[in-house]
Image (cartoon, rainbow, N blue to C red; front, side, top):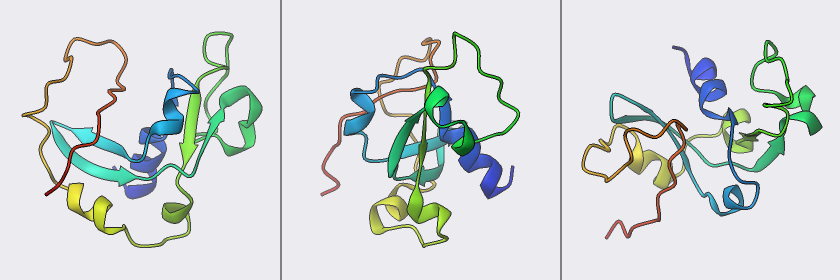
Amino acid sequence: MDEKALYDAVRGVWRASKERVKTIEYVFGVYNSLILAVYKPSKWFVCKEAKERFPRQDIVLTPKTENRLFFVDERYEQGLPPDDNEEFYIRKSITKLKLNQSAQNPITYLNPQSRG
């Protein structure tokens, strides 16, 4: 998967709380328990309110999906390099984190931990 396809896959379209996403600092793209991408959402959008900014143009909105969310990472879209925190997490394993592996929603919220 190329970088653009990975970004578009990670940034949405998600069933998530509009209030909860306001607290998200970083979003990780994870495959086989390895962090492959790190994004810092600049803004979250409700699908039905921002069709022109969709991650993929092949998405068809239904009553079940029109209130789902997606984000944009303006720094990434401007081609700026990852910040130190983003760089820190790339290629790290998440295998030791206690996650609900049976959850149907692919989103998991983690509380920040000190890197020290």
